[in-house]
Image (cartoon, rainbow, N blue to C red; front, top):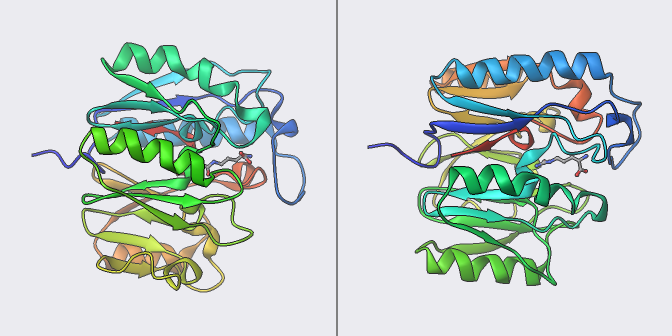
Length: 260
Ligand code: CIR
């Protein structure tokens, strides 16, 4: 049987827009290059497709410079999709742009109506529960509204906390399989992964924690050889994707797709 937390038949991505230099970032380490970001995007989509999945590639949205980070706009579960309500005001309008595609893919589409906020990057779905990290983008009211929908669909949801100064919960962790999480030590130290098998990202390679398990592959950012070795030794088939330009906008592997 398919494990819906990491075995997927479809993904949605969106090509980066020419306006990416206006994208949000915590710290300015220079503007991303559109050409390099497009090349990395093409490699990312090719890796997803190489597993046999269908990838729906959406057109760039010039009015939304962060719109290629589609993960933040929705949560995809086997029972249906839930449209998020981003905590970043400049990103709120991305949800309406994503909605028609999800309505075409799912019979059931619900939405976070507010006043709270939740971004998909703060949500980690495991086999036994949905972990939602409160962060600067995801607040208690948003988590509570999401918990009601999740409960209706038979999921238990646990509120956890994204470390201060970290954009999203999944900036610091990823699901590797039914029982295994890749995490930074700083996030694991909060105790949120008790009962899971945890693989630690080596010190100094924290930016490699945002990876995705997608069917037989693990996609991770290139340039973190010790993390790649940890995953390789644990038996995962790792594909490294250049994340240099997305990283300038605090983005990583999970942000770039919705997977279902
Ligand atoms: C933002 O700050 O919203 C974007 N520049 C990056 C979003 C990354 N998304 C994610 O981790 N799920």
